[in-house]
Length: 174
Length: 110
Figure (cartoon, rainbow over the protein chains, first blue to last red):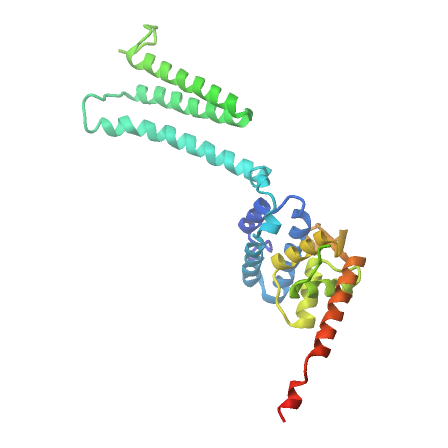
């Protein structure tokens, strides 16, 4: 049975893909793979992988990185950044929901029912997802700011209406 | 006119590329340096020097073929240019003249 995949460290490979100039990637990736295969034959997987990681680290130098613009422009990084941002937005929404939950244990002024938590959760997560959608689809900073402000004003107004009923709609809270 | 001078490692790389005569690519140059000079070189160092020498016009390059051990990626093959040949010839002449100008210290010891 084959114990380990022959592939070298994928984290190191992704790191290389991130920092390497796009026009150098193909040849240097080929060189890295060829070196790794030579090491693998001579030293076995563990040492070959260590040497591979060392080679990647030693490639991290200005002549190979080139212009810094591509560092935030590669597809791989965009996906990683998008997912990281989405997780952060959802974590913030959950953190905001935890505030009344904690407060309920210390004061009677805050008294949320399960329904309140569900509505607030939908509102916050919905806003988070809408923000993520805006950031993914809109690339101009000006429009991102405008739509971001509109989104947060809408969140604030709906939240205020649901909690204290500033407009007196049928959904207004007391 | 600006003078093109070579560092020690650059000189070695230009000569190795000339020795490999059209088959020079980064891993091949590393292996050749290890075999001939018993010196370990990283891929980062060799790539940096090859790119710099190409920028200086001492080497030229084009994409070569792929092999399975390279994961299907093409290698970049380097060749020495006429300017590169001229520069290493000059370097050699300069070194020879310096060697000839150097007094034979060993004779003075006796």
